[in-house]
Structures are given as structure tokens and as C-alpha cells.
Image (cartoon, rainbow, N blue to C red; front, side, top):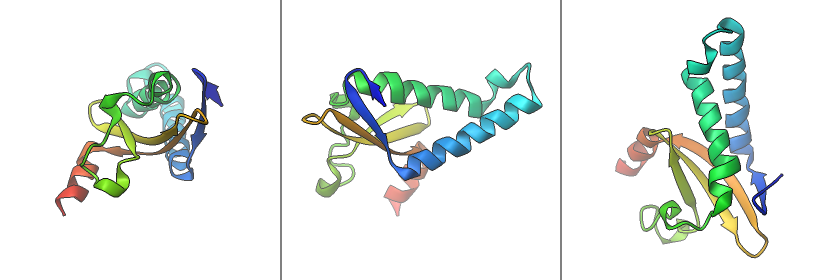
Length: 117
């Protein structure tokens, strides 16, 4: 898949997360056809699609995506985009091949609890 001149690739981890989220959104739509758009899973799926397809591919090198020293020097190649107030999308990119690889999504609280240990 290509967006904004970048090739988008997806790690198995995020593919599984997207499949589970899509299935949950479909269940909500079947159970509440009139009000499903306001459900948390539907909103999350919509926001994640927007970040993956439109926001990050415009410029994956933005300074705001840098992890800095948070993960240590061996992990500085990872970038993340915060969205939805509670979530982070982790990815890597290569400017020579114009490729972005999306890896996983996690809640901010999950990441913080791992860092504190």
C-alpha cells in the first residue's frame, strides 16, 4: 500500500491488533446499528486508520515522533505517534526506500507501567 509517496508495511503484531479491533467494531455495528459510531472501539479504529493512512505518511521524520532517550540508545530508531489521548502507534521508517513499517499500538498506561518496573 502506498500513501503520500511512502510504502506502508505492517508487522504481524499490528495486523493482529487491527483485525481484533475491526472485529470488535463490526460486532458493535451489528448490535447497535443506530449508535455504533459513538462506541469506543469504532472511534479508536477510525482514529488509528487516520493516523496510519494520513498523518504519519505526510512526514514520518517529524521531531514530535522521536522517542529521544526514553527507550535507550538501542531503540532510538523507533518512532511513535500519540493519538486518541491514551494511545501510541509505534513505527520505523527508511527515507532512502521511502518505507514506513507500522509495528504495534499500546495504551499510554501500558507503556508507563513497563517503564516503571
